[in-house]
Image (cartoon, rainbow, N blue to C red; front, side):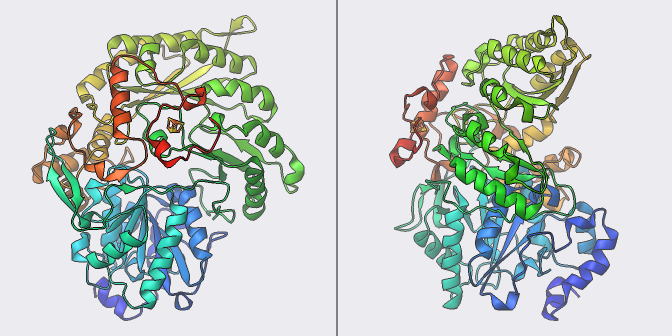
Length: 628
Ligand code: SF4
């Protein structure tokens, strides 16, 4: 009996999962139901059923704040039922296939193909084979055209929709930008369609969707050309009929103090990668690092009010029992209310049940000293993290990371003085214009930090260094750059290993082959869909996990699709069409070109905080609401 036949017999999948899956998998807690604050609406009482899917392991997905917010929003809408699903781990997938059990939602154990909409939350390029595995395990045809006209879910994806080309044949529609408003609009639209008996995924439905809801990109509704770049990428040129937007503009919440929050956040039974309450304090970043996609695509900068952050903190701690709050943003030190929030959260009367600690990830090193001065007694002295990104001051100017050696050294000295013993530093190699001189200067900088003293004596500072290859990303000034050859990266790695003292320094490198694959897909096009599908069929899963990346299978997939991955790694001419030109994230291509040219002249662009708007493109939305 296959999956479809079993479904027709109204099988109780929850019992089957309990008896035939959970006892046999390494971590049953990834698949069990009834976590604290999970929603349990009745299927029959609701009209619209949405499965929110995170294509990675449960412990990664359950930590994702965005998915929890969307889940909370949807389940508050009458008539709408949202459930969750995460990638089954490799052992679970094997059992599901052996026993013909379809992939089901966590809450009600409903097969995913019974939902009206599947909403994927995409975070990184190397989750694409997991997306295909999820569709396949749910008995859903991979390619959109094979689903249209059938009783199949509409497949929508949001999150990292910055170079969606390789997913375009599989996903019906992509939602651009902040999801809170868009998901509500999609739910209202779908409820209406279902009530009118006109919710069958096909081009007509997509046409209606993109005309009713802004910020939705449905690839099937556009015409394409071949670009003149080395990979001859397939690029979208124009809509296939009138009234279809080109480009598609991202949606964003102007006031993030007003957006709904997941204060009844789900608390997992097993340890998650972020096992604490999370509160977003700010969206966007205006520092202008030229490699940074997150900073560019999330502009304009928007802050949550201090009172709102504190109110959320009280509510989330009460509802979850966590004893630690993480204040999240791309650059928490830039949050103008940080001192006020930390001061207010120090009032333990707000948390009568137990003391609550506050974690501040994503601090810029130049903002740290000030915050430290005000809050040092509350900060756990475990490990101080900072990201110089490039080893030399010259290269930091090229990438527009405005951080001098003196600022780095002074800050590390100040944290040694107050008793910190461990530092973690993030660097990249393979950046545009990089030479061995920049690598030498990275080594010298680390040596200088090691020689810092405490009370006139040698300090016991330990430094952990994490080094990754630079990956050119879409919607950044470096989107045209080449990805360094693996040989070049290895030479630089060997140099660092040779010259950095190993005592008191731990060095870890990201796997270069993994970065290379990510670089191919980060600027990919529709042709790469064939490669992803072949890799999925060959058994590739969890490619983002170093221990699971199977380079041989991927190489075979590229060969079988007759595609040379190296073509996707070469520099792209500035005048080439790009597959992501169909999307508008606000910062203009002209601005990126200007920044690209300035990088090669080692010219910096001041942060908007310096008081001057450099007209990045966002000004067209008249939406830089905070006083920069
Ligand atoms: S529009 Fe001006 S102020 Fe706003 S993010 Fe762009 S450069 Fe900064």
